[in-house]
Image (cartoon, rainbow, N blue to C red; front, side):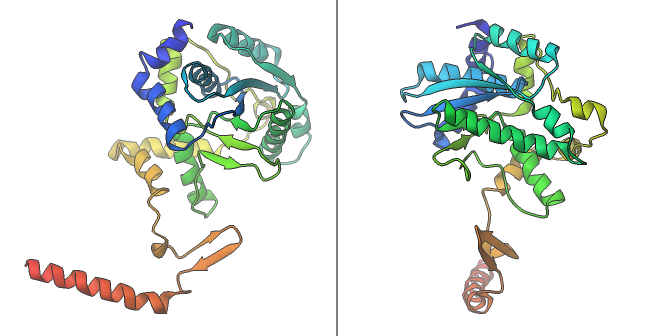
Length: 287
């Protein structure tokens, strides 16, 4: 065990290690006998995830195995060397799998990021399945969840969130898990800085050539502004995806089954009216 890993449980015990374990436990992300492919992009989040998973595997009472995967979509040589250097620093082993995803996405039209994301996802699922894994662990964190909620509302006209785990629709028996679900990005950055670690960013050669705007970056800037007047805004947004009152929604759907508030409005009005009348009587009696 090296000092960088040890800092997760010592210096950042409450902010990283405890929240990581809480996410794994609260959302039941790992079961006995799981074989988990940890997907390492080379950024700070996925590298921390791999280190946390390695530590958990050693200390957990639940037996499971881990296989680290680095998908090389066509990184520049210096970026790939940085990934290999960081793996060595962290004491991690990984399968580096070369692809031509950047080249394929570069030849597309106006939305190379969408195609790149889709190709990456398909390659990771297939690779994990070929390695005998039943789960894929991704490095999405608390801030990603909050930003996804806002992006869906502001740009997608929908109310949804990034779930801590989900079943694959195209690869039978495969699940995606997000063990860093409760870990904040600021604490990950602090951990990296504390240990003088340098990770690669997007490293996409397409966005280097094109002016590809990021809606997620716009959301990040919006949150910075909102925190100035409300430091709890992130947690409030996060909790809003848990405290959903279906009777206060215009409409909602579960799969292909759609519901509208008018569907049972006539029936529900009487019930709500009685409840409100009783509550009003209670309030009057207190005066």
